[in-house]
Amino acid sequence: MVLALSLNHRARAPFERTTAMKAKPTIIPLRRASKARRLRLTAPFLMLAALLAAPLGCAAPKYENPIGVITNRDIEIPYRQAAMRQAQTEFRDDPARIKALETLVWDRGHPNSMRVMAIDQLVEYDEADFKAKAARRLGLLASWEPLERIFEVAMERNWVDFTPVVVRNYARRAPGVADADRMERKVIAALNPGKTVEQVVFEVFADSDDSAQASEQTAAWELLCRITPDNELLPLIAQAPATTPLVADLQACAKDLHTFPRNREGVLWLHYLRDPAQQGFWDQARQAVARLTDEQRRGLELRHLPAIMRLDSATLSLDRAAL
Image (cartoon, rainbow, N blue to C red):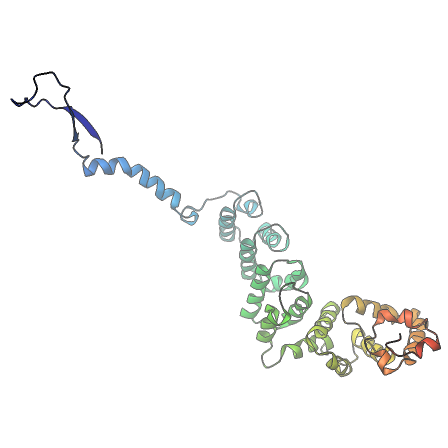
């Protein structure tokens, strides 16, 4: 409150001293400013506060070239998102817009919120084209948020033929996430009702309808080795039709060498050993493994073959513990 000072000029009472004394100050409040005056004083500040608090969407900027703003990392995310919406309305069929959206999704260094927004716009523009590119490029995504959005779209739009792609991604290990908790299980089950996840993964591996790529088939086998008990893997190999190089090689490996590879690197080496040029090595390895007892073969892997082939008869006669 604004205060003022006023001197007290009261007349002295008869009993007061006659000596001169200093007058005591008295505090008298000034009249308060009127309500109208206070409103005029505070209105500019209230308007400024309202403008600062207003969301960007209420005053979205208008760009002459919104497509150029979309991938510009120097511009803040809300403005880039506004440019995406503007470009979708004004430049929907512009190839440059589609290229910018694909850059957001597949190139690193862009925020996940923009990736998800770009996924939705690309699906809206050309669903088939996006699905085909996602099938080839899904492994480029290192963040869960855009991956999960693509999986959500696959379930929403019933992309059954996307199942091998989901299986291939499921085969990629996710540190800190158990196989049973992966979102891919939910997607596989949703796209293939009435079947277990293990059944679907086996079907991708067996590829009886020739619908899976070799990389998807190999990934399915690697995944089966993780989610299936060991004692069930050999029956699965025998059950699959030998119509693809992978199944044929696994069946020959299980029959001749009493073992089989469990990951992509092992599968690649098996393909190399099955080349006709390596027939001599294969025959020698088969003969060496044939001399082992069932106990000695327990835990046998392809990487053990070169060492086993060098063992003499005396060494091979030792039990597992002695070896």
